Length: 266
Image (cartoon, rainbow, N blue to C red; front, side, top):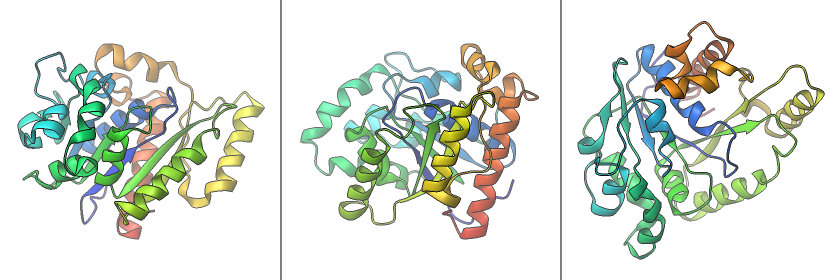
């Protein structure tokens, strides 16, 4: 896959839970790393699911993203190489991060702590993916301030577009007040079930609303995608031939090509 001419920092956000944020972050990161890009995943969700999916230790006591946000520990000191996948690193999240939302309230420049940490990393990555918690709190605001691009996974279900306006409004507020370069560059449809009319209707709605920001690649409902994290793997390595893996590969390729064609944003 082509490498971008400058680092792309992509925040994967949606305040709805269960839409495939973590699954998307992990599988896109692995796909891009396996095809020649240097990739960093920042797990910003206190549940630590991205760390689990990449098989990176994140039990209590492990240096994690909390230390970077609250104690100014450099990212390079907490980033761990992902076993078996060269060029892929992960900054884990431990349960400590659950308290960061409250602790950040009184911290100076609280919205830009993550942006500073990423900017201060001595190694330059082609992609930095930030996996956000399912909320619109200070952790997500930190991710939006640190990123240039927002990737929104949208589940092909009835309530898919509910709450999306609130997310877009928050992104616009961050753009106005904190990060003028922020752009919703990519929409990815997840959990698509071809057998239902509903999935088709949601896809049409999303494509009509967001136009070319929506990737052509669509992620189907696929049991392999769900099984992979229980083995501490992405679906890309767990079952490379599955429909889930090929769909995520197509999505990663599309994101890479868009970055080259348009200088970083779609």
